[in-house]
Image 1 (cartoon, one colour):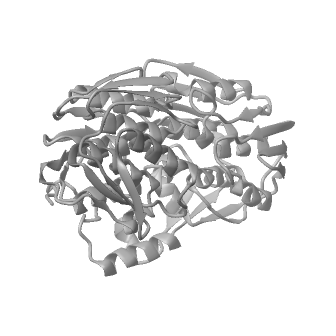
Image 2 (spheres, rainbow, N blue to C red):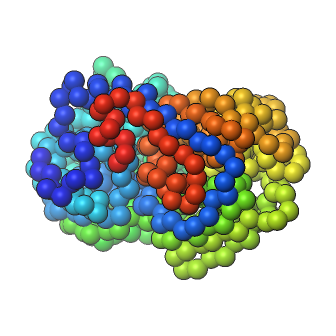
Image 3 (tube, one colour):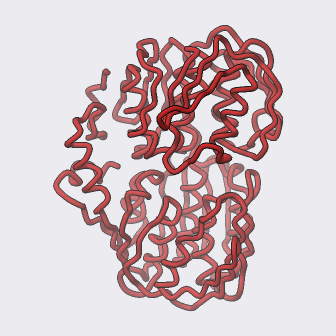
Length: 459
């Protein structure tokens, strides 16, 4: 594997021995963030590229023997994991100092995605479709915690089987073979972003036409389709519930820039609002954020938008509670649910937040209660009575977006809040502590050990 000499910003090499991997994991799990509340967040920041767009874009390189270059890639743990996964397959990668990644899959020598990597990043399942389409076989570990028959994996497999794939399960692995995938009509039983992406990538090299019905509409899918079309694919309808893909014989290379991260942008806007501050975000696409921006305005924020920027000014009056019901794009994103639970926790009144996309995504509520939030949980509905003040407390992050919620809670709480298990947040927010400090937050990272001094400041 080749690594560009300008990879100074990535201290993790792509071929670490097991001892270093174990030490990294141990120290990373011990990291903490300490936040002290009371300061309004003020200033300007740039938004990073979207992780959920960058991952499938990197994996789409498996579809071609030509080099692809993906720029505006965020510097995150999941990106490093994807690089390591591709590297273990024999793919050559070069990274420059601006996190543009050149991926050359002409040297691929393995079609196996091992459990050790897949268990840490469920998006690894996305290699299944491209490997089948170009190489006719794939062995991909079942994602961690995902039993056979569960909906997320079945959506991928059902579609691939309809395209002519033979699939067996053996030793915790999906083992799939296909001479050449064949175009067909696929109806998604439920809307799935990764399912849509996997089948769309597979269909680019299939014989004939594939129609994906009830497809996901997220901007990240549109971004992937745009890149694939740049590579020579023939895809129409991305961004609607019906995507049509006319298969081609081969794909070429491309140079594609990742779209901005709409969830990171929404998180920073909300941080400014709940802290009583004022913020301007650069490098964003406001039209990807209409559901979130509408709810921020409903809460009392003053929002202005331009072609590639958005600004927010907090109201002088108390924040107003907003009702939230998550749903697939273009509805309100589940990835902003935890942050709006926090907003409603300090709003002037009662609100409800209904989670319809993911089960068990209210674990942050128990931690917010430790800080004084008044929240009652009834199934997939949270009933929230706003309080005038949260109080600092030791809390534990349970997932990526819960981590962001708790960090922001610490920045508005009275006193000091220690957020444990922050390795979750490093999977999806690029240098969040540094960006928050840039706009006035009182926040510091406590490393977990000696190795963390090399890993954590960049990841």
